[in-house]
Image 1 (tube, rainbow, N blue to C red):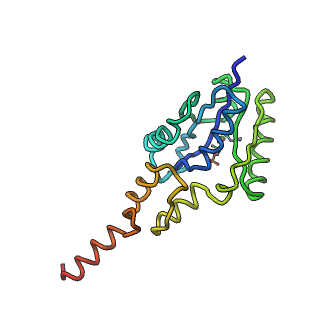
Image 2 (cartoon, helix red, strand yellow):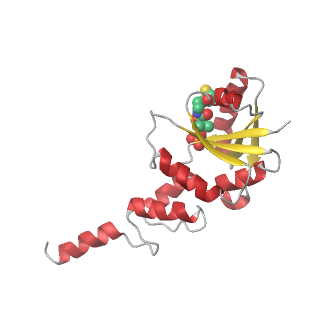
Length: 180
Ligand code: PNS
């Protein structure tokens, strides 16, 4: 029997920590379906299409990985995909409470599908999509935390160049100096 896991999440955007979980998960499962939750109630920084594009770029080195989107319950999606497992990454203790609650609720909803937690590599223990977005927003160096395309897209979104210069602000400052 083919062992299939879904790896659900927002992936707004994908980080190297997510890729690390996929790599570890592939040691346990034949196929991993990275599934982006389409949540109309939660507007992300990136559109679903952009998230897919970034995932495709980050995951191209792996075979046996699919990218998909879903809405509704994760366990229902897992059932449709005939997946035996729901993969989730665990970093610090702060993740535990939320993940534990979600795993127990998912088990209550469907006892056939198991949640599998994998520890991220130590180098990713402090990273998350949210904290990386926050750093990028203020021109922080996010080099090595996300795939190259994600870094470029974050810098574009917030108007920074790779050297940390804010294009929008410097344009404004130049215009101010020129008296425009
Ligand atoms: O990357 P995230 O935002 O931590 O992922 C959270 C996600 C998508 C795994 C979670 O919100 C989810 O599974 N949502 C779908 C609805 C659902 O099944 N919720 C859990 C049981 S009620």
